[in-house]
Image (cartoon, rainbow, N blue to C red):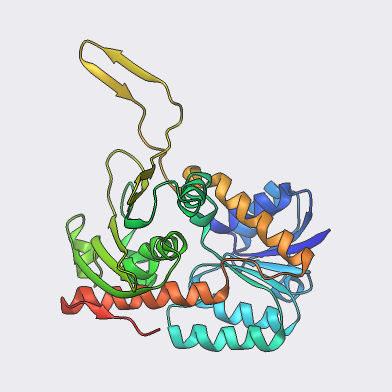
Length: 327
């Protein structure tokens, strides 16, 4: 049974810790977090212990859900100790630092998986499988919609790395995954339409990106920090023979019909609910890969490539020019 220590007792750490505790092939050996009350509460909820950072790196694997500025350091420490690593995105906000970190992992020969959970969503996965099976012929247009129900606090915005690196990076990875080939050009447009305080903090809250691949496939990604109707997560693939579409999820499929029209439930409120099954699926993939000694996906390289796209989108939005991507 794979022993796993969880680093970080915040929102994402709580998701992963509970999933590890419930997994039949894993043993949650403890929670490490400098905020003792948070670590104690999570450890109690998961039936495990609060452990020191040093003890965390004695487990077979570490799951990193701590703040972004700690990710690369923790990955390197784990790699040098010969431990397998699952790390939430991003590895770091600096592509140069990510490259340094990946070089350390490669030299150590250890396992690193990056947490792009949307690849593990059953709906998106089924769309990808049917696309690859040729159900709609050759892919021509891909549209990815991702809109949060409300913006995060400005204190978070200030350390997030910006909408493209924090929020859209998930969609950029999903685009690479579904397209099946690398973008060669990116153009971004962005505005501050939701909260002026976000603009004052140097970020944007509404954005659209267009990606183009070498074969001419086009992908449009749209993000907003506000959706009054819930957590909006949709994908549409248009091909030479038809269309594949993955829509939003609601709590139930019950629909009310009256003389006034049709009413259904809103989309699920946020990522905790929408991607609950995906988080479990990605953990299972990680554990299976470590046990089998195979490389899990998404890899550290996937993390780097998504960050490079986010960097290019940030530059494009600032300059108003399309960015030609270097392979």
